[in-house]
Amino acid sequence: MAADGSIGVPNVTHLQQLRSRGRPRYFLALFGAAFVAAVAYVDPGNFATNVAGGAEFGYMLIWTVLAANLMAMLIQFLSAKAGIATGRNLAQLCREHFPRPVTWGLWVQAEIIAMATDLAEIVGAAIALNLLFGTPLFVGGLIGSAMAFALLALHSRGYRRFETAIIGLLGVILAGFLYEAFKIGPDASGVLGGFVPELDGTDSLLLAVGIIGATVMPHVIYLHSALTQDRIPPRDDEERRTLINFQKIDVGLAMGIAGFINLSMLAIAAAVLGSTGIDTIEGAYDGLKELVSPAAGLAFGLALLASGIAASSVGTFAGQVVMQGFIQRTIPLFLRRGITMAPALVVLAIGVDPTRSLVISQVILSFGIPFALVPLVMLTARRDVMGQFANHPVTTAVASFFATVIIALNLFLLYLTFTGG
Image 1 (spheres, rainbow, N blue to C red):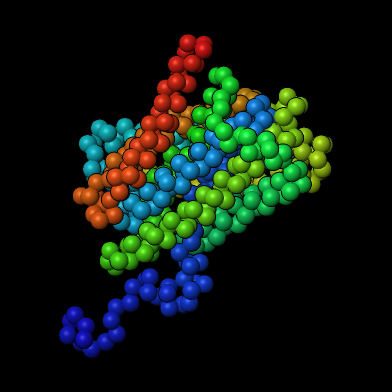
Image 2 (spheres, helix red, strand yellow):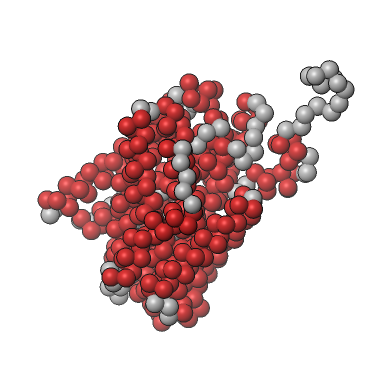
């Protein structure tokens, strides 16, 4: 008998409906959120920092890519868990639990980070179109922005269409670097040696911080919680636990793919460009085309284009989530697109070196990480926020250690920059 006294079929939850469709369809329905976040971890900024790192320092900075990816796995899981456990995204939780001045400060810096993010995505797409079709950089930036906006428009027709398109573009990036890896075959001993932590002066530290900034992305720390907060509404804590446990698989697989792509980028750059003195994306494309094969250059260019388009749409989506969560306001997507793309178009118009601007944008992003990561760790550790899903003390300690390392690296980089060390 139902709660209202009538006889009927008990209410079936969304999760139970998915289970009734069979295990393959059930698992496929749960996958997706982490893959949208993962695209931001293989954006054009990663191309720039990984190519520069491999070309200038060989396999030395592979350990940095691995460390950043391990950080990303924990961080994105905590973000996804927060969305499921609370039904709120991280920006909303900050607004609800932090003083108003703190909330507004976090929002302002998040908007600056959004511009740095879009700089990387649009410049990367413009470079790809220039390399593949000879399109002028400024025109390429406009075309890339329009393509990203068209992709984002799919979200209005349902999150699964948007996720499917993003996963498809991630597949293009993965296929490109699988081809490169098998075609070039980086030195195995060099790759293994690169897992031993080592730095060599200020330039290597700058690239190390840039790699972390390119890998651990502040805007998707906010976005991931929004992707999971009402994607599959749980009825009770048992269903919440089921969804949270599945996120370990989703995050592990998605971030694992992103990590492989990043490691491949750096290793390929080390193998092909290590003795040439070339450390730009354009140089990497030309080097692959001339030193390996035209197909290798094409695969690299297509992967870069897919990366720029997918990551740009995800970045704009994240910007909307941040604004709505922090200050309960939204603006039309066209206006947001125009605001965040403006710095990138200025860079392209005045002729700033594109690869250098990408690396610098990633350093700026690394400075934004603590302002997303520290609130995430603080809030997910609180039982009054997360209930029984609050972090285990060990989890909080590890996440706090990651935040401390990132902050320390950034402070040390500032010291070296201003003292000329």
